[in-house]
Amino acid sequence: MKRNLRITPEGTKDYLFKECTAVNYVCKKITKVFENHQFHQVITPALEYYDLFSSIRAEDMFKTTDNTGNIVVVRPDSTLPIARMVTTRLQNEVFPVRLYYNQAVYRNNPSLTGRSNEIMQLGVELIGSSGKRADLEIITTAVESMQSVCDDFRLEIGHSMLFNALADELDADEETKDIIKTYIENKNYSALNDILDKLPKSETATAIRKLPSLFGGDEVFAQAEKFIKSERALEALAYLKDLYSTLSVLNLGDKLSLDLGLVQRNEYYSGIVFSGYIPGCGDSVISGGRYDKIFNMFDCEMGAAGFAINVNFIAEKSKHSPKKNIAEVLVFAKSDETIMDAITYTSQLVKSGVKAQFSILSDEKEAREFAERLKIKRVEVI
Image 1 (spheres, helix red, strand yellow):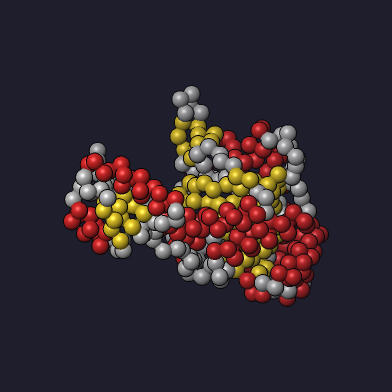
Image 2 (cartoon, rainbow, N blue to C red; image 1 turned 90 degrees about the vertical axis):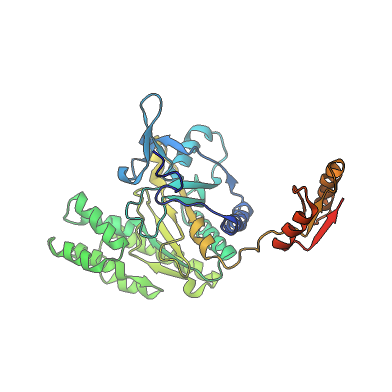
């Protein structure tokens, strides 16, 4: 069967010249920010065992089997593999460790809704530390990363414990709570109200009903305190208030805001959470937070926080991508005897800082026509 010979699988695409240039530009700029903050690159396998991703829905992953019959998946997330790596190969490192990655993840999005199944991500993991200082380091690194490639962006911060603490007190089963979480994430007010109307009335249900509408600036805290009565949720709110106040020195204005209805899809978040947006892109281009509990699955207690950036989205919208790399000089060998002289001369030009290209065409007229089509200004004949 060759019906799919000329197409890519659904949710994937080929990247051509300008697109590759844009992706490389974004990666270079953000990677520099990471390395300036002393994060060090790691790479994890594209294939991992299914057992590692118990917090991700099975239907969201691409699965196959290895030669022993074990189920393996194409990497749907980079944080969990890095947690595995830290607990097995970096046990003797000096903690906290700062790691970053630049690799694709693969998620099965049946409806797609603007999302791809293959996502190039840049991200950092700050592992071995908890508390305000670590959270501020992660958030400020995220801000600098966005500033390096975007003039206009918005970063929204929240706290996962706000919803989790309220959900623990809600009179509903786990399936219903998961549905409610999805409605809050999507800010689907109508569906959220419908499902909460079917539950017993309570202060908790009222607070959850209000969560997705609690976003903006400082005024959000006063609004939230009117409805939130859960002690654990109030502790999370107080911590978020302190963090937000500290971040005010960055003078980001409306680029930094609060969203108390911010919940992340991955179940492992346990503290602050944040998402970033740029104009013209309906989905978040950066998401992250704190996930201390992620190491429990490895029988290890360790603080961890980080974020992932969707390189594809930013590259598509970036207005700062450099122009296409075009040679300034085309070097043509007049005869077979001068081929190596021409190749050597081309290398010398490149080493001296000149953008030069050796012509592989054997006819001078064709070479000159080629240079004209590519707008190469000069042809040198050897």
